[in-house]
Length: 62
Image (tube, rainbow, N blue to C red; front, side, top):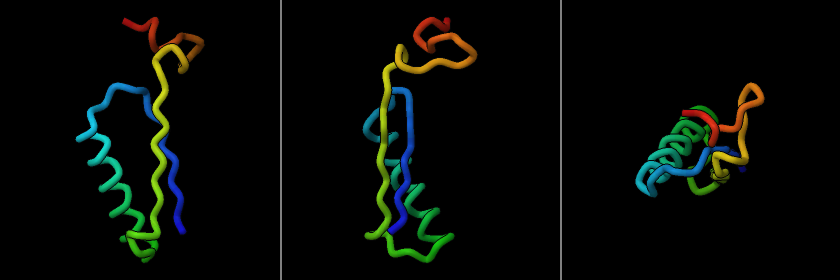
């Protein structure tokens, strides 16, 4: 049972999230041979004020 965790900054549409899940599932199936119904994808969305790069919160970027 492949289990994929994807961390994203919140703000993508439901359609974009569907596309991510579909494409990732297809890639796992293609490269592992696992049936699609056994591929689990977890999307973790975080707010910009809960993520930083280089000591700067994403919410503080312009």
